[in-house]
Length: 103
Image (tube, rainbow, N blue to C red):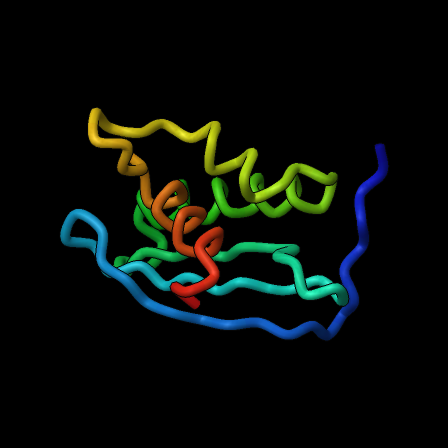
C-alpha cells in the first residue's frame, strides 16, 4: 500500500475544545475528495510533554489516514473508558472529526 500525497494547499478547519481541563486546538485538513487527510492537535501549554505527545499522536493518525486507514477504524481502535468515551486527547479529536455534525 502506498501513501496518498496531499496537495500543498488544501481546505482545513480549526476548532478548540477542552478535555480534562486542557484547552486543545484541533485542525483538520481535507483531501481533494473532501475526506479527512490529516489531523493536527496542540495543547494550550505549548512545547509541554503533553503537547508533544498529542502532536506526535496526530502525526501518526494523519499518516494512517494517508495510508488508507479510515476514521472509523481509528475511532474503533482507541482506548475508551467504561462509558465508551475516548480516554485520550487524540481519541477525543478523532471522535469529533468522525462525527460530521461537530465540525
